[in-house]
Image 1 (cartoon, rainbow, N blue to C red):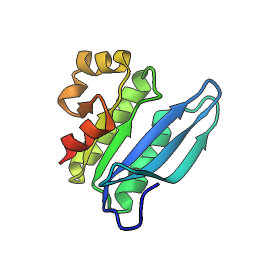
Image 2 (image 1 turned 45 degrees about the horizontal axis):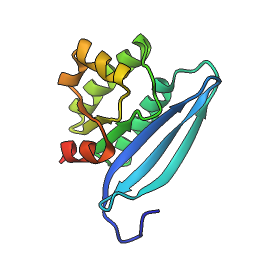
Image 3 (image 1 turned 90 degrees about the vertical axis):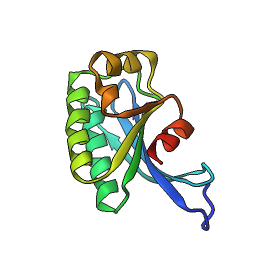
Image 4 (image 1 turned 180 degrees about the horizontal axis):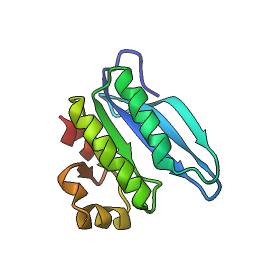
Length: 136
C-alpha cells in the first residue's frame, strides 16, 4: 500500500469484467508505483463495463485529477459500445484539459485500437509503468 508521504501521480481505473457482471476498481498510483484502492464498483450481469468506466472517469475528474490510466489488464475484448464510450470519453477528456492512457491491452484489444485508429488518440502502453511515462 501507498505511504502517506508519497506524491500522487495518477488515478488508475481497472475494469474487471466477469461472465456475470463484474467490477471496476479505482486506485491511486503514487510516485513509488504503489497502488491504493480508493473505490470499488460492482455492476450487474448484463451491464457493459465501459458504462461503469465512464462514471469512474467522471468521478476522478470531478475530484481534480487530470491524469488517468485505464488499465485493461483483465479485459480480453471490447465491443462497439465500449469503443463508442471510449471515443466519447476522449472528447470529454480533451475538452477538460486532462490526459488519459490505456495500459495492458490484450493483443486483440491492441489490434482493435490499431484497426480503428484509436491508437492515434489514446496513449497506448504495454504496462502501467510505460503508461505513466506517456502521461508525463
